[in-house]
Length: 153
Image (cartoon, rainbow, N blue to C red):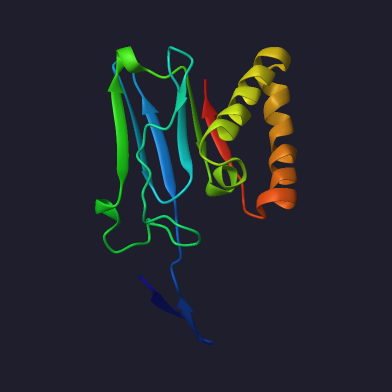
């Protein structure tokens, strides 16, 4: 919802745009993932299978997306949850620039598998130090979009 800010010199119209939120919470007894907007949540289960537990929102297409800025945002959230038995081994949350580069299937899953393999081979400190340059490269050369990843192993 737009609003007007007035200082002593001018009026400035501030227009809200889109704001995606993807969150993951885990306790000893359950896990919860929720999302509004684009981007993706990908989990690795105990059988070493990658999947997207949060259902895709068909209203997110090209430059149009649901958003925290929407008037009815509370009703646009999607979520997934599970108990201790279905606790993921790894969780990846990414902006739409990442899935825009790799898609939503095997290429994206391969990218995350490579991150996990690199962590096992080289250590998390090295991988997290290298990820900003890797994402910058893909952003400049492929997607031309912002890219961010959060993960938990």
